[in-house]
Amino acid sequence: MLYALLLMVVVVGVGALMFARTVAEIQHSGDDAAIVQTLLVARGAANLGGQVLQGAVRKELHEIVETRSSTTGRWSFGNTGSSASSPVPNATSVVNDLNGVAQVLQASIDSILCSSTDFSPSTGGSGRFVVYFTGTACGAPLPSGVSLPGGRFVEGNPRGGASSAAEQTYAIPFVMVAEGSLGQYRRNVVIQGEYRFTVGRGSFAKYALFTNVHRMNANQNSEVWFTEDTLFDGPVHTNNFFRFFRNPWFGGKVTSAGCGDPGDTDCDGSFNRRGAEFFGEGFVRWQDMRPDSDNPSYTNGSGTHAPSLAEVDWEAAFVALPENNQDQEQAARDGGIRVNGDVSQLRLYAADAAGNPLVPDGNGGFTPTATYQYIEVLRGSTTTRYRYGPDLILHQLQSGQWVSLNRQFNGVIYVDGDIERLTGPARSPSNSSDPRRAPPALARFAQITIAADDDIRITGDLKYEDPPCSGVPTRNADGTVTPATCDNLDAVNVLGIYTQDGDVLIGHNNSQSSYNAPRNVTIHGVLMTSSGRVEVEDYDQDRNDPKGAVNLMGGIIEYYYGAFGTFNSATGNQVSGYDRKFTYDQRMSMGIEPPFFPTVTHDGVKDVIVFSYGQREQVY
Image (cartoon, rainbow, N blue to C red; front, side, top):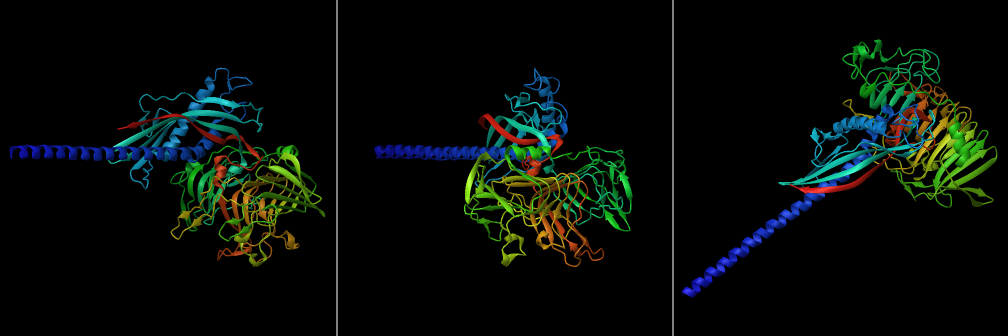
């Protein structure tokens, strides 16, 4: 019996030990699983941080570079020396200049990241990240044992004066701390790297709307008022000043130089209009705005006049429009298509190898995927046809055969005259009133700038195969505004339309029907004229037969503000011409632009690359 009792004690003891060990192993396995899961969450946060560096941070950097880089020196940053191979012999000035950029950039991204909530992956736990361009981010110092060197010049060529040809690359070091958490478990991933950005002259394509003189013409009585129907979701600038009636909405930065008499290249008068005019109140200097210059509001017998301003600068720099289109003409000579004289019709379309335009599905998609971008130039009775694929090798149709021209197309089409008709492929006859049924004019890989000396008349839909945005800003019943959806910002296709001495016209000609654009015409691209207007042709004719809306996704840059139609002031109903439904292509604020599009005298960020030099992980 004693032996049996001893054996029972031993068995129970062994069982207890095995149970305890099993419990410990289960707990240990749970610890391991939690640690792995928090690591995965931390790495997910780091990946999200990389996306933010390519997106929101890039946008902030673009605006900072515009204001802090040199506009006249040989180098964007570090202009105290005269070396031809680098900004300065010892690069000290570069470090100081880029440290200044890093300080402003840190404040900008802190306002974006520090107040944002943690993200929660579907697998459980939560993650967050902060980015250091300076010694402090979101009020916290750099992790121990981590340091940030100064910024540096990477590569590039000096420019002469205001030349737009030279591009330069600079780098700002960064540290990203990404954290994953699950219950009591925490894991950090610390990444050190370099934020490299290429700087070149900023493009006019960055504007949703730009005017030199904010009137319809030279007549002082041709005033332009922004009203409650005004919805701009991108940067808006004038060298003149704005007028507000009721509550126009601006989703991007609003800037005005306040020049009372803008000239072709500078302010001919004085900057005596740094402010805005409010209906029934007259002109108000920005220092005198009530309650303040960021949120001006005036109530009188005509209502409350309070523009919704996301960000505003009433003392912005004067931005001169280009004096010529020589850069575009030279680009066309070097690697584009140059056409002498007037063009009867210029037609763009994305198609398959047989030249068949893509078929719209009615929901924004097309089939099949474009194989080639086609370009047709009609002069008199002679049509010249070109095409190119993703490799950009340009071919010309000769005697029924596509013959390689043995060069890559740089995207520029230059016309030494006017373009009577610019169009994409025609809509299906059975759906001629539906812009959703228009095939695309630009293939998903196509990047084209059309430049002309004189007028350019748009007579058909010009759509992207791969549009970056959908919809338009819409005012809700409660007065708020829902912006357009721009969730495809990696799209590549882009179109620029530019005339130096003419107007960009939306065809609405009563004497010649072939000059007319379709109802509810859709235009994807940036439209620009250095001396004229972007407007609907004969906008006040053909009354009581309005043509719907111009559905523009891109931007407008013009000397004067062009008219699109007329409306009944009592009912608000459209009477003639077209309505405006504009969506800003947000890629333009990130430094994307049509090839060889005109540039301003300020630098902009052309490209960013995020380099990671190493990372370390920590459990705590």
